[in-house]
Length: 192
Image 1 (cartoon, helix red, strand yellow):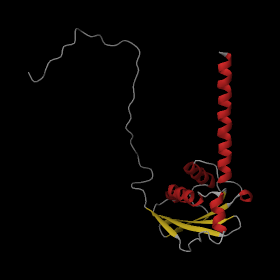
Image 2 (spheres, one colour):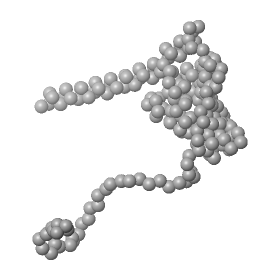
Image 3 (cartoon, rainbow, N blue to C red):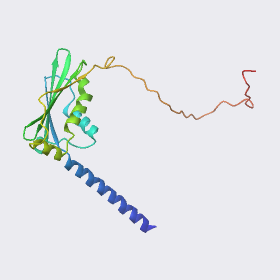
Image 4 (cartoon, rainbow, N blue to C red):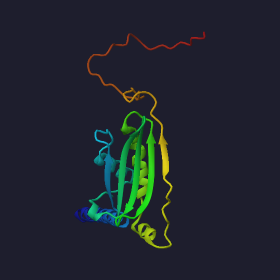
C-alpha cells in the first residue's frame, strides 16, 4: 500500500512538472507584447490593467510584459468624434516597424462601449508566434496594408443601467413542523 502511494505521489509531481514546462514553452513560442494607451484627459475608457487582463483571458496565456522585454508594441488612442468614441490601435515591431492598424468606432455614450471589441481586436492582432513575427521582417514576409480596417460597434440597446433577469432553479430546505396529512391521498380523474 505504501509503495502504491509513493507512485501516485511521483506521478502527480511529474504531471505538475510537465504542466509548468509546457506553460513556460508556450510563453517562449508566442510573441510578448507591451501596451500603451493614450487619450483625452478624463476619458472613461478601460484601464491598461483591465484591457491586458481581458486580452490575456481571450488568448488564455500571459503575454504582456514591460516594453524592454516585448517583441511587439500596441498603442491605443481614444478620441471622441462628435457623439462616437473611436479607438485607433497600432501594432509595431520591437524595432518600431508598423505592422498594422485598426480603428474601432462605438456609438455608445460611454467609452466603455469599446471594451469588449477592443480586447478582441487586440487579441487577434497580437496572436503571433515568434516565428511568424520573424517572417514578417523577411523580404518574403507579409507586408502590412496601409488601409486601416474599421470596425463599427453599435450602442447597446437600453440604458447602461438597465436591469436583466435570470431564470434559475433552486431548492429550499426547511426545518420544523410540517403539516400533517389528514388521511390517505386520493386521486380522481377530473374528466369523470
